[in-house]
Image 1 (cartoon, rainbow, N blue to C red):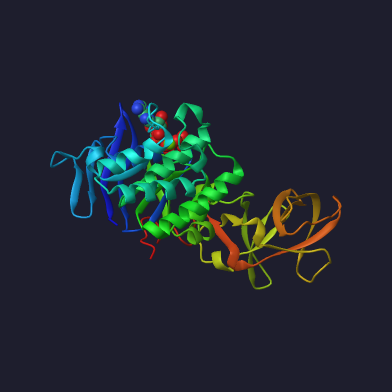
Image 2: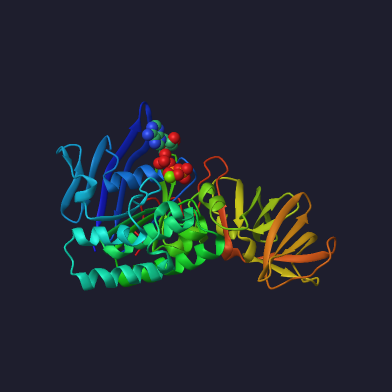
Length: 374
Ligand SMILES: Nc1ncnc2c1ncn2[C@@H]1O[C@H](COP(=O)(O)OP(=O)(O)OP(=O)(O)O)[C@@H](O)[C@H]1O
Ligand SMILES: [Mg+2]
């Protein structure tokens, strides 16, 4: 277990800076995920940690060891950083069997034969690839190759694991199984892990900490719960969650002693936003946070059902409220006829408010960026 510390890491390609003065601490044994849209700099950041990319400025430490420093002129090569890596570009060795791919690095470490055998068998079992021991990588599908790469990384039990979209080639079912497996392994090995993905669900399920990046900078750092429930800006709010978060733009108005945000055809309780200087705001509500009734209730708002999409365990409902459209999620297989009236209500605690000009969450923007979530 090691701490990884990035200070002022900057990387440019030509005149374009793709990672801006990044400061980041990954605590010993932590599972940290870097999440963000395509091209935001996730892979570049991970490659810098691995030593595959040389930043233009800044310093990287593993505990007390400086592995990169522009100022001190230190660049420790990747193979000397004692890492487990899975990069799309880091393929298996094509001339070695699956088994040999896993054995070789263990032999290089000088482990005993019994230990090597045990680790290899366990690693292959854990990714369900034991039946393929004697095959060559060219005889495997992309997803199978990826699983062998995961097994190779697991078997070497390094103190730091760096993974760049390691499950991207797997089908949905296998991906879920491998997620569970990675979680179990992380608990067992306790390696400090940096995991890159653009899959928000993967980030939420796996991580102790999620780092959301956009355009080369960190937008928010937090536990999955905080990222999901207290997004620091509209980008994070919209990037995370499936189905998408509901956004309602409107004016703050006072009605009968309470403050509401009046959107097109929809009212959101807004006492929490009342102190805001801005009169025009965007409210966000998660689809599963909207309360729903098939019967008229006092104070609830009437909406019309556009469609119900059962997925089996949950049902996504699209409703129209005046000119606004909202998505709701209900548990179970809901069978309702399109066109019927429904009534909805909002729990004020589940609503966030954003400044439409800056996109910032008016409640959390003052205390978020760089927050060290414990
Ligand atoms: N070798 C390179 N030369 C020039 N530009 C590069 C190079 N590698 C990456 N970039 C650019 O740097 C930016 C960040 O790339 P990076 O690979 O880190 O993105 P990413 O967040 O991993 O995206 P994705 O989710 O698509 O993998 C992109 O705009 C990309 O085009
Ligand atoms: Mg990438």
